[in-house]
Image 1 (cartoon, rainbow, N blue to C red):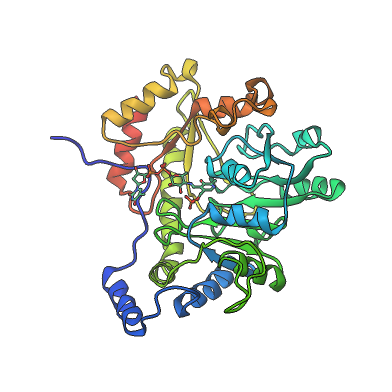
Image 2: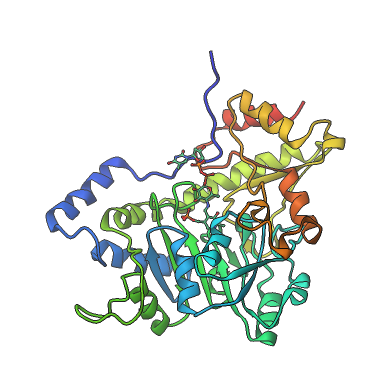
Length: 369
Ligand code: T4K
């Protein structure tokens, strides 16, 4: 008999009975989208939970990236990382902006601040770093560079829900930060996302932009888009917010078990917790040194798959390797050695709140021989 399928993630789901109750309220009110009461309440509760001054909800984590670039009127070239999900760079492409890839720091997987300045040209207007796997970027160094050259900074914080450094939300860094509430994330609203900003004026502008640019019944102040979160997802999101801390703690316990078991294994490395950081354990990447481990990354990946353990090679291939981007000068592999090394050696192990002791033992059993 086939072994139970273990997937890389599993969505955090609200109690169905509780969800029915809120659906009944929505049915009774007949207000199902366009800044309804659940939407307003979720914005309020998320801002408090995430310790951010202002937040705007979106339908996914890609549209806030596109909208932030619009709101800040970013043009020309934007410095970014090739080690992310394609949505990061696609948001630039959709705004007619040229992405300029900069290599990553081999310990965190995030853009290497030491390499940013060399990539700045007269056309550079912004930096778009990613807190990959929820590991905080070196926001201080990035801010110094941005200030020196008069650049905006938009953080793709899709993986960084609830991440804090010395008690402060990582989402407060830069000009704006974006979040994804996709089903595969630590916190989900099925599909969903958000944009975090520092002031009320910017929030107002973003709220116009995600509603076609409408500033009133008959006034359109900007060429906006439609990216409004509906009442069903907002209500679902409110229920999930109540259990996200427990889910993060369950993930933490899985990370502890993985680290303990994998530490002695030759040819396998992983990322440690960073001092002063509240991590969210959104992913658990391991890196395979084929020579020392005695098996390539892909051999291990397919071996796990054959045993019904579905890990993922996030983020392989690099964004710079996709046909849309590979012709760019900055996409040349010789410019991105650390990113290539990480992409070629990574496997993200299953990581979610429902993994049992037995599951973890089975996953580790496919790796430890
Ligand atoms: N920026 C960054 C850095 C991102 O990582 C992402 C998204 C974005 C921006 C854009 O945010 P969104 O517009 O997506 O909100 C997934 C997600 O679709 C994507 O949200 C995510 N990053 C990316 C890293 O991963 P896939 O294609 O790998 O997911 P999929 O469908 O293969 O699912 C993975 C596993 O999760 C499945 O094997 C089983 C489990 N699963 C998945 C779904 C959808 C479930 O158990 N239930 C489900 O409903 O892209």
